[in-house]
Image (cartoon, rainbow, N blue to C red; front, side, top):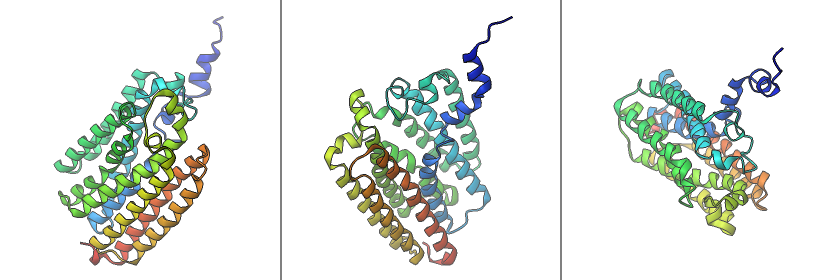
Length: 303
């Protein structure tokens, strides 16, 4: 009788392999999808001056999920030699050997193909922007080896959904598009610095770079300054887009959430810094809902 292979059983039967790929795509941790989705839908709503229709809503919602998942897979492939040495990431499927690099590459290619099929249903300008966004997203995981502000590259990658939303609706971009793009980069740098504070000690040991390492003891102050710049950008968006009081309520909620984040990171405790990072989901949701409500009540007021 063949010898019972406990390792094979645990890997293939007790824990079906599909769950490893779900974890690899971070489907169990949707925070990244939220942080990518809310600014994208906000831009789509502004470009459409309200409900964009089921086609574009599904294209951008599903596309966001697919591209974020593909980005996570590429990130884990790039960081496979580091993840096992970092407390927060040592349990990731590639680092543990649950998924082979070759399997992860095929999985990432499949996710990208599905995202491509979605964007092909839009127009040429949107397809070009999607391609550029994919290139930036593919470059980002390697930037922590070379620059102290990889968060800027992440911010650019996380902001491509904004011009894509405008081109999908109008085949063009505007001054409002550029302002939303810049504002989202500022916000991304602020919340990803909170995220980087979680790994700062491990990154220093491994010789990796991040904004949290660059800012050092000024991290809280600079995060606060970035949050103020972001809020100022929102007020400029409110004026340029000729929005109304619902959007200002969203801004006010964001102020309260940022103050709470500053409270969480005041002692730079790993778990609380991570909680502050997660809290940005509510910032994005509040602003999206504020825009959606504003455009529902005052559809004629948006340029």
